[in-house]
Amino acid sequence: MFRSILKTLSAEWALHKHNKLNKQGVFDIDAQKFYVIPNALPEHNYHEALYDLERLKQDWVRSNTFWRRGCAIGGHELREACSRDWLGYLQSKEFITRVREATSLESLCAC
Image 1 (tube, one colour):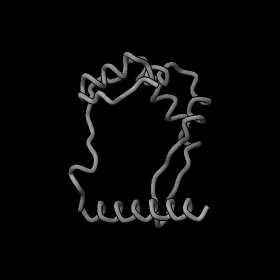
Image 2 (cartoon, rainbow, N blue to C red):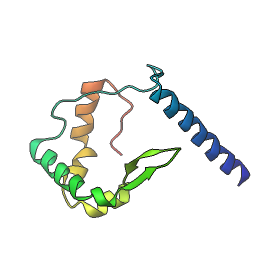
Image 3 (cartoon, rainbow, N blue to C red):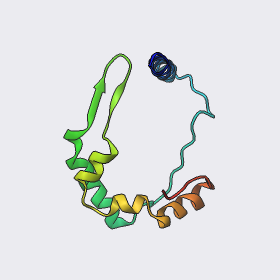
Image 4 (cartoon, rainbow, N blue to C red):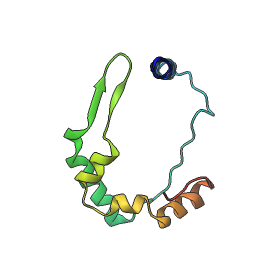
């Protein structure tokens, strides 16, 4: 248990340091890559996602502390609250194939 607490504290401290440096404009260009995939969702899925996410805003867990600032929602809450097929599309082979082709990231899996 002590190791688990130590590991968690260590990860939180590293995140705090990382965020503090980012706010100062210091960042590692290799730390994270992002890709812009135009029209990643079909039009109807895109509008369904916008509608659902706007409706779910009040359910997001918000944090505005010294350590963290932002919001999130758990995957199980998202799946329970959204009856749309856009979530299924994000896990489909079709979507994963599109992302692989756009990014050359072969390690993506449709789990």
